[in-house]
Image 1: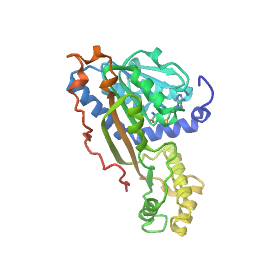
Image 2: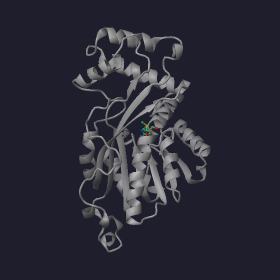
Image 3: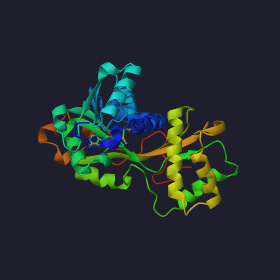
Image 4: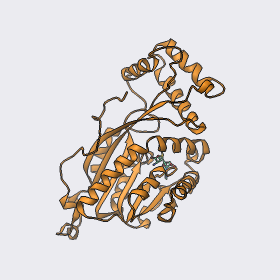
Length: 321
Ligand SMILES: C[S@@+](CC[C@H](N)C(=O)[O-])C[C@H]1O[C@@H](n2cnc3c(N)ncnc32)[C@H](O)[C@@H]1O
């Protein structure tokens, strides 16, 4: 950690949880990467350099390197623990020769020193910046004229449903209904995704895609995933006190406090639903120097209207079961 003030992200426990979350959401990440790739294919631009800002444990970094085969991916994070995982995953997947890690503080360090990029990727990262618009502006300044920024942020809380009904048939449906009824849902580790269009515009970026991705996967039965599920269910307990049926909450409390963590295979076969708000943006034309706006400006062929071109986006704001 270069500046030593992001302590929690140095903890192995947090890095492990983020790696689990990265794996559980890799379908969403791949879907978002694929749409960026489609856009570059449409304009005929080869992607040679990608920056993954706030790369965390690097699950997305490796997916970017796999998808953009002619690109080097520069993975930037303030946490040495995260970067070590990013390097390990890249090595495991055979893309380490095209992944460069950089320990940088996105609030303090000079990102411009990293050079220019075709794609600036920032998943669940911008909300950590002290000044989100300033960080988005920095990202815009890193872009080549045809470049794109892709920002993913949490749309709704992660939803965990165990296969076990804890002796209370229908408990997961009732907890989900109670969640929908909450007045102000708290989204751990995220800010309100609705603010991003305005922030992107303030940073000189024109949004070309704004939609929501959602996916439900069956969680693998391993210890790091069990720990992640338990933390998520503890978060649900906190959120739903005073909202859900107290008997359901008692059953959930007994489950998450049980020792060992997953007695009788209780955590096996859990379904995890995650959703992400996806924004893809390009440098706003009015801000581009005149030289970039000639016939060679690839961005000119992109549609100016907002689009929802993802394969299976759900309507923005729709709570996911
Ligand atoms: C929620 S994680 C997201 C990781 C990854 N992009 C993903 O989608 O799973 C946020 C990451 O941003 C990094 N981060 C937070 N604040 C930072 C800062 N000021 N400078 C550099 N990295 C920072 C953290 O270390 C952490 O790895």
